[in-house]
Every structure is written in C-alpha cells, then in structure tokens.
Length: 149
Image (cartoon, rainbow, N blue to C red):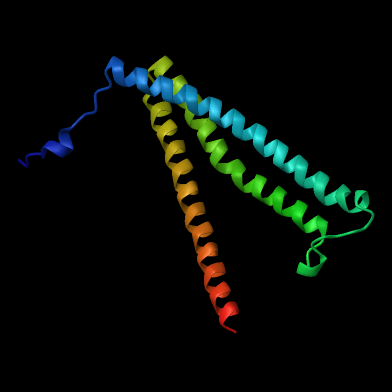
C-alpha cells in the first residue's frame, strides 16, 4: 500500500478571518469592476464622439494629418482599448460575484469558479503588460535607429 505525501493529503481550511478577508476583497473588487465598466463606457463614448464629430467641429482641420492619421482613427483606438479593457474588468466582476455567493452559501464550485475568474483576470493583465512592454521596446529600438540615420 502506497502512502500519500503530506502535500497530497493537505486540505485547505478557511477560518472566519480568511472568510472575512475574502468577503472584503470581493467587495472591493466589485467596486473596482463597476468603476471599470463606467470607465469603459466613457472611453467608448469618447472614442465614438471623437472619431465621428471632431473632424466636423474643427472645420476639417486635422492636427494629425502630418502623421497620416485621421480623427476617425484616433477615435477607433479609444474604442479598441475600451473593448480590450472590458475582459479583465469582466473577470474581476465575475470573481467578486462568485466569491460573495460562495461565501454566503458555502458552495465549493462557486469558490473554485471565483478563483478561476481571478486567475483569468491576472493572466489577461499579465499578457497585456507583456504586449505593451514589447511595443514600447520596439518603439525604443526604432527610435534609436531613426536617430542614428
């Protein structure tokens, strides 16, 4: 008969302090996700407004014309960033709702799904940061080459 190691037989116990910390964490993550949704809505509305109306309000003057951009492209960038930011905020919102429900009903499945959403939130944010830093590195490298030429 094979003996199981300590790590295989370990069971996590949630005492009242840990449950209190998780309840407070879920409340703050709910608050931050609601603010995130509001910010996304404002960003998308601004992008649509900027892209659709700013060109006509400025009398057809485009200060970004020398860069090859129209005002519509800049509005589109805001909309795309808002759509990209929706996913981590949605994962954070799901974490908070599922964690509150899991703590209220002592439901292990909801508890597991809450942490699955939190993992997805951090995974998305981590990959997003890697992409942004990579873009910054490329811009820096191209800037150095452009300065040397």
